[in-house]
Length: 445
Image 1 (cartoon, one colour):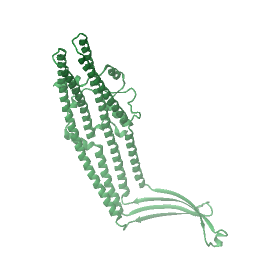
Image 2 (spheres, rainbow, N blue to C red; image 1 turned 90 degrees about the horizontal axis):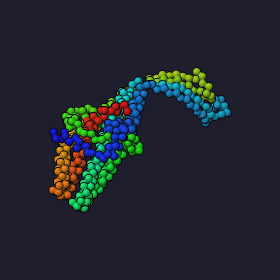
Image 3 (cartoon, helix red, strand yellow; image 1 turned 90 degrees about the vertical axis):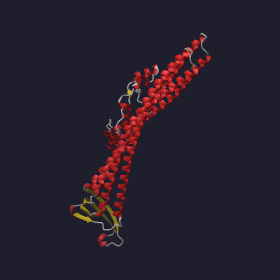
Image 4 (cartoon, rainbow, N blue to C red; image 1 turned 180 degrees about the vertical axis):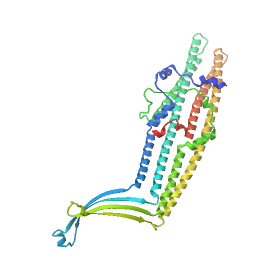
């Protein structure tokens, strides 16, 4: 096929100075490494991990209710009596009373409220972890976009520099012809204008390139907005056959519905809401509490003795008969919450299917554009070379040569955009299916 022979054209040449810089820079920053650094250093993901740890602590709080409670207490009070008998208090109308005790309590049965509260906390932790994974998914997609935008800007720099070299070479030829009386000043000035126009394109592309690098560095968690010292962005490599082999849409959708973190988050939210129903229904059941106490009281001083203490054990059964419909309203609220979570989960699944189909359409379009722009760039290059030869032989006008060169620069720019768009479309599909997080141990961060 024609496009297989155009790989060299697909990667425009860069200046010797840039080549030297990139050859000596070590190491080269590849996309996978940039994404790995972002997962490790990005503060947004760190904040998501902090939220996960908070929810895990709530699980431990819920589990603690299964254990007995032991409280120690002591107090001291001075009591003034209005008409105390003198035989009791003597000349003083006040008395010091001190108490000390140890009380244990244990809920034996609470209508399974603890069980469902613990389940709700566990599902909340799972949902928080899924939210962190989804934040990682979106972060990885953002890093890929910034990385590819920087590569596109660098390709545009190379294209503009190639345009500058072309015009500089023809300007030197025009000056040489003018010195021997076969050329005109207008031709020299035309190519000088072309040189300056190409320089302006280099300046604009370099600004975009630097801005993209700053954005990439911030996503990677670098506080100074720069790539790590000694690192250079990896060049845009040729496209492989695998990049032009589109996946099966049905398989991509099935993978997304199974692996997308936001769907897992919705599933956890639904389970948590359903556990809330069981927690609310606990109000319909009795409650059984066991308690034991060892408490003492002493007057005038703190010199407690064993005779000052009494021990007690109690078993309390309580059952709410009427509370104004509180439990019924609480159950109704929990059921409505579960219905909301169920609808949100359905919406998340529908959105996921739409995301995958949209990403597939973008990938298909990017592939077709790449094949078309490869072929077109080769045709435009061949035409420019023919027009250049005709101009050198005096068989065509300078206007025609300018048009042919301008068409070539535009065709190379569209080809560079198509190459980058194909890579971005692949990353977009991986983000839509959740596959983008697969190469990383996100759960261990």
